[in-house]
Length: 322
Image (cartoon, rainbow, N blue to C red; front, top):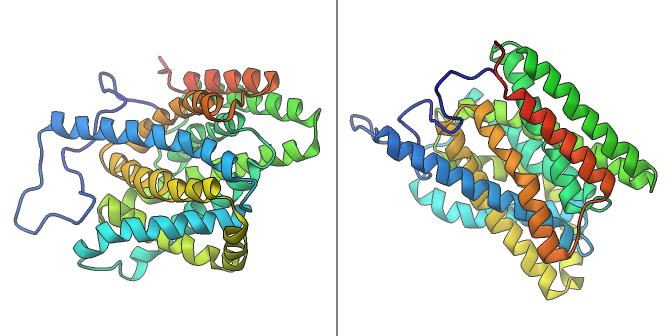
């Protein structure tokens, strides 16, 4: 995505941003100094990256105890309660009419579809490789911004995209030499990345009307309703799950879901979508480190090589065309 010369990748596009609780009352100013808003945006990004990186490891750790749909439902149910306790006391009005359409879209695609696909993928892929594959997401955001937001297709965006998808092919080929289940995992990760990318583009305009916490909670509730058919599985699996797995589920619901999706939405309300998506390049490396420390799990050679190619491609997309 083309960037403006002299602008930091984390520089907010507006000095105003919605709070996690509710909009500023009419007739009052919610403006903050640009440096203050920029610091808050950076802090939100750091929290999001760290917690989302831990989610890949957490999903892998509790995967043996919970099926993909049940795990998603459990995460969303916990997140709905925790975030709802913060949002509901300050909620003054619900979305009306057409305002629901984008919320329904990212609720179904991101909170339900993305999580189910990623959970299923990590049954056959390690946490680090999954994070590397999901890292195709920033490229997809840039491409859709070029089409939908009319930002065009700079030369380096095209070159970087081709290189990154070449890296994905390397990971897929390397996985295919071991088992077809790994190929399915790669495809599921790519599906999750696509769903997340579309959701970022859709969520951005919603954050002009609703605070980050409310926009996130609305999406969580939509995803929760979509996953209710997995309720029976969740109850059965909770009864059989060991305590560490149950605690892992609670962690995933509170931190990578309720907190991280809210800090992401807050940052998205301050920073351009393409620039914010670029910060998720930090997730794979963080995930590999956490996975090595917690699970003693390191990606395969194919995964590392393909992932490095992906990161190179993603980096090339950030170059400016002369």
